[in-house]
Length: 272
Ligand code: NI
Image (cartoon, rainbow, N blue to C red; front, side, top):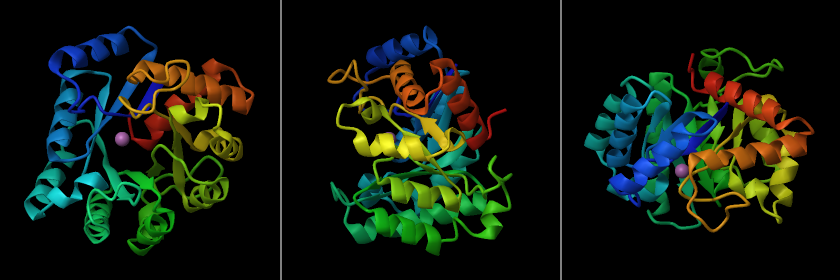
């Protein structure tokens, strides 16, 4: 039982044939749940239709910081409509990307805030993309009230009694200190394939420091392929290798790591 908490079946690099191949591989694997994550309007529409078509597929809708240059009020309204469709579990992936700067930073910040406000009013979990923008992401989340009592009161507390802000730091790549700060504020941390890489010292420290109850695993496929398949296109069944590495770091069995991270994701995304 595995839950790939972040993938892009909706990625434009797939044609129908290559997507079908991935879908067949998922259905033949131990993966029980896949979260197809939107990055603009068209990919969000595709994620919702994949969720309707496959029992193991769920959707997240929103506009990635790269694509905020295409955003306008109409698109935001359409995304809010999509968010109310069956099996849509969160708003994402939203955030800031100062590494690529594909959209200018003011535009990224403006639509990040607007989509946070949308998630708060819809009372939905939020999936964050943060690349080289740690401080601005944290400041904006705080300013917009993601960690406020009125937000955390909606959700049951975490197992250790901390508040739960239903905020997921997708493909986490920051420091252990920042991860711990987020955890105390009520965030959940998701780790992807890079945790399997030889130079993953920083990410290993994060996995060591964060209780397994606050960890999710993901592929971010078709990107970030874990070892031993690094260099090939990624797909959800390879989330197994991230689960195996997390199990090793935590000193638990693979089966336990798979089951606990699956339960965590189901809880995070409100899947019964
Ligand atoms: Ni992604």
